[in-house]
Length: 434
Image (tube, rainbow, N blue to C red; front, top):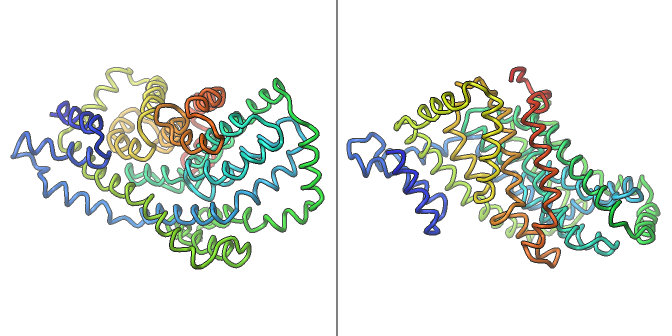
């Protein structure tokens, strides 16, 4: 039966049906094959609706809305100026400033494509003006944009936590060190590239002088409210003052105050388009979550997760690290063809029995899963960030993908380190076991 379900899902995707619809059809397949099967159409619909009865789920649209407001409100530019002030005159300083900006903006948006778009639209023209290759500049933003789903607050971490019963707060903390590690890896390659190809030191010096003319105090004053954003969001969560959902709501209110009244970079009349943008982004994700919740329950009734756990134990001989490396390779392949959210919502619930059987920590597995799938943002044929960054760099998607390849390799090296050393993910969390 489970084989037929897999075939229905694959054929639905080949026919071009939305992933949410493909999941619903797959969920209904067992009852079509066997009318006595418990999970009939009513059961599937009921499971979809009950899956929405989740307060933490409200954090997703709130973070999407605040991210959209911050992106249009010019927050990325103010962050970039501060980092450019400190790094601008060093070798590869400006490309590294872009990567650090993506790191910080990820702590605002929680989304990879949003980070790529917000930072790239502002920094790519700056890098080109300073003499950097436009494809190289676009490749930096496309790859570093993946940090948006690793650094908390991360929308994929919320979805993984909801689908597996893992603490979202622990997942947020677990993403900090891996995110910094990946950023350092990307900056290392940027340094190597700039050393090899050279930089226009004269243009860079003039740009840095213009920033220096504002003075550090002036830049910090201008950027203070932007830098304070992740502090308020994450400080509220880990200070015990707010849940992730409450922090997401606070982030919306804060972003409105900052962008409307302090920076005055948006207008009240323009708020409706932010709401529409957030709804358009959230609606497909909501359908995915509903359908994946029903799909997970149907799979449980078929015994598929338990069968998968038995197969994994038999195949990998109880060696958790061997399983994690094989899992990493599978995720890298899946990430080439499927977005992060559906991959997590489909695979997450199926893996719970296997994780328990292997004695693996679900927080650690969640970090590996999100990092591996984040690489899919810049891997053809469906790398979303490639399609976002290519027009900004005025280049073709495949040309951009070739330029991004060394950055992707740096990303994968970081992933291998994260898999090999679980304490990197668990050090800041309440989780103490592998």
